[in-house]
Length: 139
Image (cartoon, rainbow, N blue to C red; front, side, top):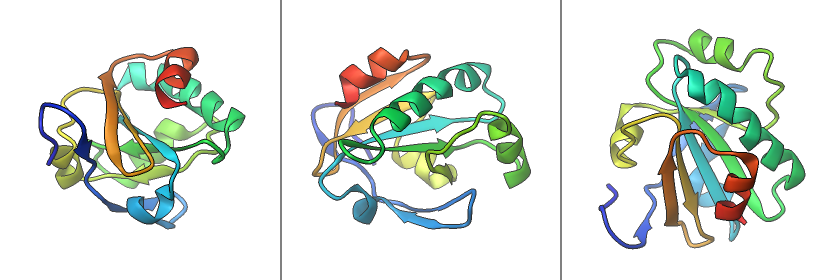
């Protein structure tokens, strides 16, 4: 569970992607910064802002920063698949759950968490973010 002050260790997770791969946060990060983008399929702002995250992912494919889009508050996998349909996302889309939502204290969508190479939360924000805003926080 995250505290409300200072740097803190990001909770580890083991989640499945839409492609049925398993992602373990601790193993996947290595020593790179990581952006966790929490979204809900019913969130219209998420639909608009996820393109900015995809653009950052394309420009920095795993070199300096690892990026994950994590679905929360969905009824079933089909709802998440419908959300990403037509968005041409190449970044991993993970299927989150209620315990992850609670561990990261996600209360609004979209929510962004930037982790340093030691899995410490160095930045978090909510709402729409431009590609430049994401880049300034993540790189």
